[in-house]
Each structure stands twice: as C-alpha cells, then as structure tokens.
Image 1 (cartoon, helix red, strand yellow):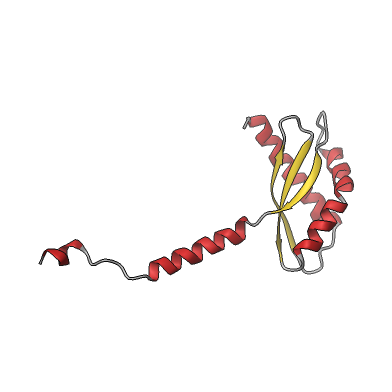
Image 2 (tube, rainbow, N blue to C red):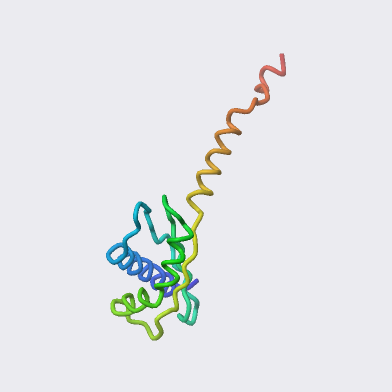
Length: 121
C-alpha cells in the first residue's frame, strides 16, 4: 500500500470519528472507528467500527443508513478528487484479541514436560 493511501486512510478515520462522536447519540454504546480502508481509486471506503455495549446491529444499521450524511460532513474537511462512498462494517479484532489471550492463559495452565536435567538422572 502506498504512503499516500495510508495517509488518506488515517485522515478519513480521524474525520469520520470526529463526525460520529460529535453528531450522534449512541445510548449506552461506545462506538469507535478502528480503521478505514479506501480503495486505490478513492471511490469506496470500508469503515471498520468497534462497538462496546448496546446492540451492534442497530448501531451498524444507523451508520449505514446515515452514510451519505457522514460523507457530506467528512467531504467538507477532507478535500479529495472523489469523496469515497462509506460502507460501515463491524470490527471484531478486540474480541478476537481477548479470545487469543484467554486461550494463551489456558495453554499456560496445561502440564508441561519435565526439564531435561530431571530426565538425565
């Protein structure tokens, strides 16, 4: 991926986050934009959203329903040849990370082989 596209992704992530935090009420949910993946031609963007608490389905439906409004607000602050069409998706990376940590904790509790020094005696 090019450095320019990386900068565009990060800029879009920050601006979308600002719009979502400023202009939407989430009623008990914590909504965070974790990443944005803009296509090479800057026409589409996948926006990955982490949602803690509340209904993930309702939050995602609201974001996808209001994507045009969010695009308009972002386009005022981010000047690009094309303003990407936003598609919101659930980001489960935090949950997967917790699962991996829990699995590693379980593996650490399993019995291990005795050290080699005990086997030689």
